[in-house]
Image 1 (cartoon, helix red, strand yellow):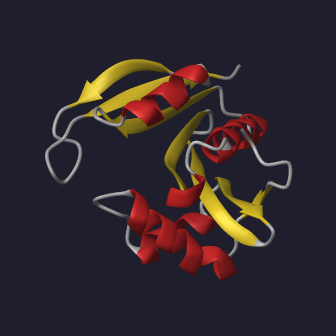
Image 2 (cartoon, rainbow, N blue to C red):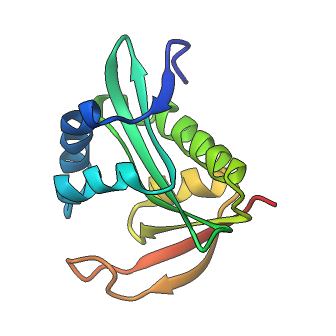
Length: 149
């Protein structure tokens, strides 16, 4: 169930500490804070989801090669997972990337992350490739694509 009070807006430098906190609690190999900051300056969609002024999650999507969007990361705070926040962040990211001219969106996801894979499939993404040993711990990634033409 999604919160009626959820607001999705562009991320800012002031959000970085909360974004990094969610990043660290969400991934075994989190992006460094400096890289999360750098993504603020990439063309694309860097969004945060808030409720009552608190950041519940974020999504980073960038434009590559003018027509390809790449979802770099989506994460939601532990206490708000499975509440629709990730689904809304994904939908808004894809919409923003499409408005910037992308024709397809890609992402990588851990093979073991069944919940995320299910979320992406429900959004229309298809698994079209696999990258062996993609993650630091050696786990493979599924590469998923969505056409947004």
